[in-house]
Image 1 (tube, rainbow, N blue to C red):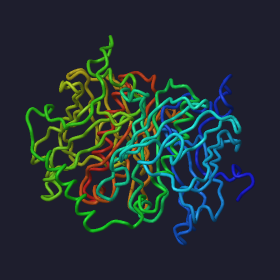
Image 2 (image 1 turned 135 degrees about the vertical axis):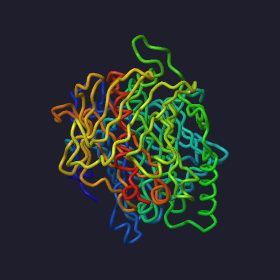
Image 3 (image 1 turned 180 degrees about the vertical axis):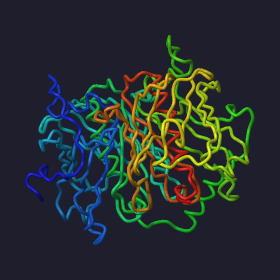
Image 4 (image 1 turned 120 degrees about the horizontal axis):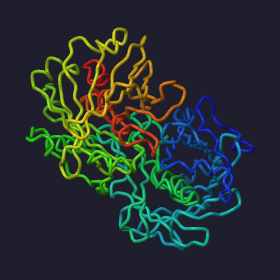
Length: 526
């Protein structure tokens, strides 16, 4: 073991700027004041991969724009890790960018815990104690009795229940063909109001098959008490150890032919249900839990009120069954989700069949975006232009991809256009008068593969390119989707208090990123 553990932090990642201390808040937890999401990425231990011996877990804790805000490292005995598995006694040390320990999570060894039928408040349930600062208990997270679904309760320091976390029946099933997040909704004690979610993210075939280095996250309301955010953050480690440190549940080389066949069938069945075109376009919406419709806001284009409470939008392209087996390009369809997986919009492309086959991403198209009442609230237009896309030739007047963004339909909000660059993607976003607003740049290499599954980031900056306001990203969708389809998953983050019309422009620009870089036959991993 290292003494002290918290001095073993990785180098080379951008840290979130340290906020000022807040009276009444445990030192070091000020970071959480302006966060509504934390991503916890477990680090790969090379020795563990090569020897099979369980090493101490280490985690990078990131905000929504991938800046590091904490670092977590396990302290435990070697023999306990090898012989006791996830039941082992451990202490999780959580430190900030000054290498000061700001939180501590303790788990005592208890034999034969983890059975959902036997877990009670008094015995047989997995439990962690959460301290902030070190030595000051702020609460507990404990497994509860259930028939088969994961069930966890969060308690305060006096063991009064605060929140309920439940998981799905099939919480261990992720593989190359089933890569959606595994969600654990967070509710109040009545289990009627969803306050956020914990989730396990698919990390790619290489990581999932050969390591137990998983990626987790938690979302919560921005205005939630900081100690409550810390409790939910601490409960993430319980979810990890309880469900994903188990040898048989972390996807480590345990698949059977039957298991994979079943998942393929489920994938194809789901895709087939959406392979038929429908008219009018905006009426074809998949069954999914929709975000509650907000009240109209004066001065805001109708339907864009959803964005007032959002600082992140996820766009998931739907798999097209006919496209997979025929090789013919079908109309793209997208589910637009908020950070807790609720749908806020649905988008569907309108284009000519011949244009899709022969013109590829240069084709003329209109993207219709509708809300849960099936009313079209936005429209993204792209006109056909021959020979666009070369980063060297793109200018404001010619040879660059450009889209026009309307909200409501017919009212131009602005434009997004490819700009000249040496090799890196370069996009500018303009208002309705073609005055520049934001700059979006991408990486030199936008490649993803089985062994390279991190998000491909496109930072959003002001015109000086010195202040990062958010990011666009393409998320690894899993081997099955990446190899056999161009159905990608994208997202955009922005400040919660950004103008709604600006959020709409950044959201519309996501479709430009998709068509420019990930609809190309040679670039979409077919």
